[in-house]
Image 1: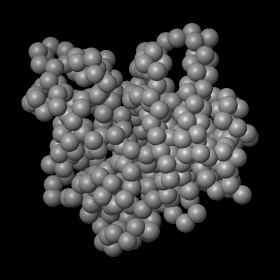
Image 2: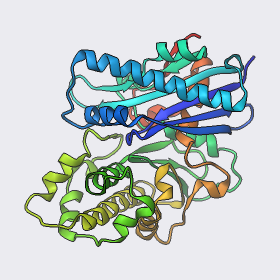
Image 3: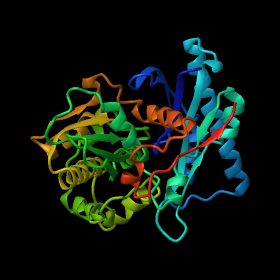
Length: 374
């Protein structure tokens, strides 16, 4: 039986698709990876829809679903061709899809990920597992974050795990989320979205410098924190809400930022510096509040490559050590993609994703994802 899995995800930044080839025979192992950029026109269409009031016709919506799926399939096939692997050697492909809306609260909570898995299965000839979040929502959970369950599996046999105090895994994507792993492994797995990590930083630098992201945090480093703006941003009620909780670009976007900037005359570089402070302080507050015995913080996601953001987080959490998971031999850029390869395996084994409900607030364990045969 094939024992290789593919995991694919595009995060809230919508800059491209991360693809991970993984095996789970003993412990999770990344065998190969790549990032497949979205065509710029497709990326802009996704971002326009994902921002709070993005509206398109039903025909446009359906077409976007298929176009994203075709791009996901192309990304998977590119990795397989590069590695000389036949699709028959892949047991399953776990596709997260592209989140365009996440509304876990209200009378009719929902989450929407585009990238039709029927199309992916047809084009790749690989059994595809997708739609991982909606069953959890149906069971009363937030459907997010799902990564903590994999973080626990990823670090379960790491001998550097402290015997006293908890370990936190911090994922710095568009949105930041944390996983709290107890030192003795006896406490329930916990985790939640803390708020923006890179989504506002990317959006602001795109608006003012026409760049996809703030390389090395240079724009933020050229500015200084505006305390008045920071105080306004920190007043958003999301930050004080207790977990379980989750959020996304549909909440933290440029319109949200503009509302807090009203009446203020602040240089763009100072806004960028303030957004770094917002991310760092909300992350640190979440960790100190909910993981009071934290011994160390391991960071994954694209934000690890922003030294200004990493330094701000380190300063906010000092003297707690903060470091990239690269220091313990894990590629920080593909942890989320590996998460969905792993969830695909769990689904094929008809196993409820372990401990997800203790993170999301669902009524109990649920088998997540639908299977679309090759």
